[in-house]
Length: 252
Image 1 (spheres, rainbow, N blue to C red):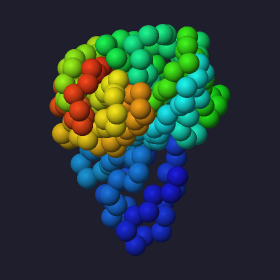
Image 2: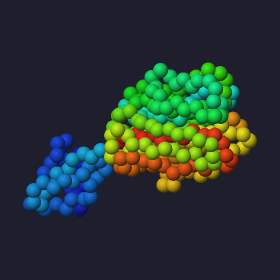
Image 3: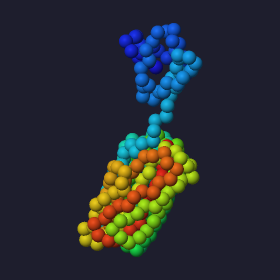
Image 4: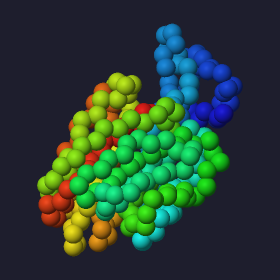
């Protein structure tokens, strides 16, 4: 691996950490991507690999018409250890939502007028570009899917809440891993009448996604922090409806 040092010729470092002595009269550059300079005695440094921070590599939202099978897009190209998360919602409280057998449910929440479920899979690199979610009866769906990279490879965790208002409120989540670099996903689902839509998202969150049909809506947003717990603010929807809300944590 070449290390460029100011106006000097490149130095080729071995894979193992290398010690560069001050007697070499070299000016070291700032740390390059994926490397960090750590002190090693007076006037010298050793360069070691650093872990990339967890990140949402791709996300997408979509809907499905009245059917008992719904195709959900899984975005991007997968690498082993990526965590795939899908939040899926119906506008009807009746019926069951079933993910493929190699996916694990995060929550299943039924509130008056809404039926929501989220599930995840830790990728092994063999995944396809979509999955099929099966319903016990034909329904319209709304969904959001995420591909999260540079994770710790451990199971995500979730907390849920329900209510009736214009402000779906994802609850506090204190995951078992404590303080760590974490992607937080806040979500809301609602059974709607007419043209109710998501009009506001939790403060401090980004990558706002939503879908709505005449029979339901879904909205999600994300945040990255190292806090040991997270209590997102509220979403805002354009008319009072019954809703379910979720907070999901994915460890980096």
